[in-house]
Image 1 (cartoon, rainbow, N blue to C red):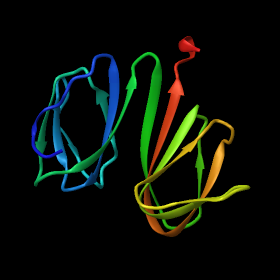
Image 2: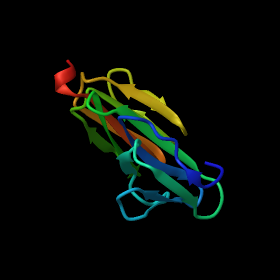
Image 3: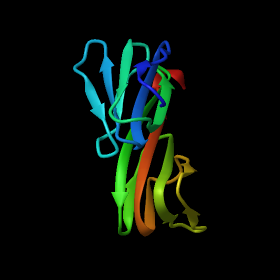
Image 4: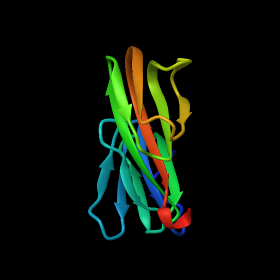
Length: 151
């Protein structure tokens, strides 16, 4: 995000925003108090079809946006910082692990190593993954589910 101003609207879409780089952003979402999102804060979820104004705290940011069609798909985004072996649990239809910084190995029959800004797509076959960081790492765990009525 290079400058402040209105966010693009997307009908019937839910979105979650997390700041990856930069000082942060203040979002004025219609009907809510202003929300500050920084690298240290939890990702912020809000409807993408509600008027939203953005003001940058101190210059451009790089953000992570996850958007899903309301009523068809749901999502949850969690920032996780690890420095030791950590288990991630998920019952989601699809789980994505974005390794923002650091380097991790996802244990299993065929271990997978991912580095900075790599994303691993995990299906519903396993409920738990063991993550082994080579050094402290910041991850984003993104869980995506179909809404049952759409199966």
